[in-house]
Length: 171
Image (cartoon, rainbow, N blue to C red; front, side, top):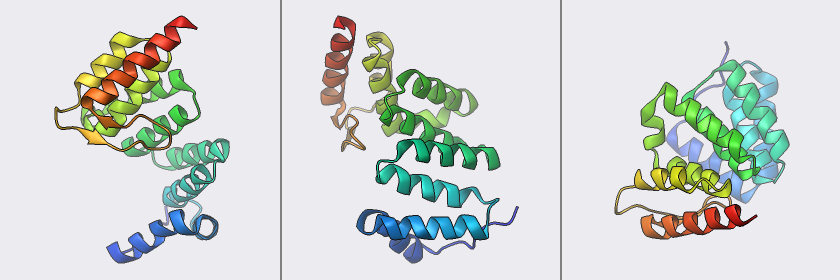
């Protein structure tokens, strides 16, 4: 497999910054990378980030699946689970999170993903599982909301999970 040249930290920051300031340019660079290095999952991951940023979630999922077909990597699977959550495909997201955890328990030690999985469980009305994920958060945990997901400190996230589960159970 031929991979695109590695970027140094400064280049990577500049490139990643384009996603937020000039997403179409970021997308063009990702597409150029794919044309030049079609067997490198990095280009597909970059393009899926651009598609997701632009709200083209189905295209983002196609690209993340292509990246996984080239290199089935745990962090990429976590990104896929987060994307499925964003697409409101909660059970599929939970299944993906569980595959990740089965392959490497350290991956769900990443707090943002515990919050994402807790939200998925809550939106399906499974309060017990959602609270179990909230318990994984350390007491000083605090995070912003990512892509419309839950944010706040541990108690705020737990309260939001309780509210979402109650709403799901009513409907």
